[in-house]
Image 1 (tube, helix red, strand yellow):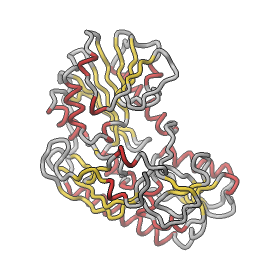
Image 2 (tube, one colour):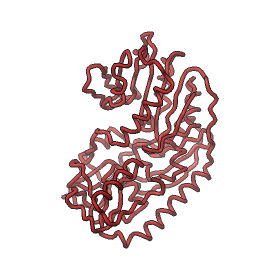
Image 3 (cartoon, helix red, strand yellow):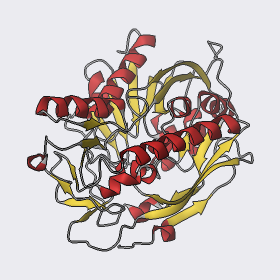
Length: 394
């Protein structure tokens, strides 16, 4: 399936909150917003494509933010230009390591538990618990593992029958950066609540709305992340299904993460921060003004220069910094991307051998602090004279 009109692949549009079903407010219109993760061959000389008319909406009742237009995943990921590798980035690995430490903080003895990873992908998270638990289960439509100790269940998350896992054993359910992708997160959590007992634990981590607003990182909004949970919205949706948030922490190293501990019983009184639509709109406007000023100040200095880092979120950054489209090239060391370009951008992606240390370099892969810092350190070690970093917080 090939198309250049991605508006045709919108599955449905929503204006009511996917958490509480209340009416919501439009925070920002995003006309011709680029899709991420899609690349094209350098021989593809047609004009940039892969945009949809998007909209950010916010629920003042439960403090949940979400995208209005939901893409048909079964269609867009059949596109021949989708080449994203499932190999985890360093930022994702660090985030998982921090998640593991959060889990171990509240459970001293893991030996009597079965751990079930919902959306476990390549079992990276479960491998941290090898030999420590009674049983390890990975539930994911693309679940894989290289270790026979991990049990694989290939299933779409919205279709999981958790009752089939009832066996009288104590369980730890975990899910890392998964629920933000779900069209109907409440459906999964309602299904999960049917099996969670007083002896079980549920740990989740996902992009934090609080950190996105505080650090003004609206360039991290992408079509894959339909939902942007706050502590308040995750608490409310859990209460609706009979579960309770009893601990949490924020982690700004990877996409600005919020992780929570959920149980059947309430053991801790959690106070959440309330937002208004005005506070989010003000943060978004500040972000837009910053990008406009940066683009104005740097567009001549960086014209036909070079970017570094062909991360998946470069197209959304370029939406706010059009100067990226005027770079002569974007340097990267991922062989899967070298010799291609984003479907929504013009600059070709080239290998490390084409980096010119005597010319200015714009760090284009800034979606996580870890990525931006690692690239900056690398460029310094390579002797690049002029390094430009567009993010406000790194």
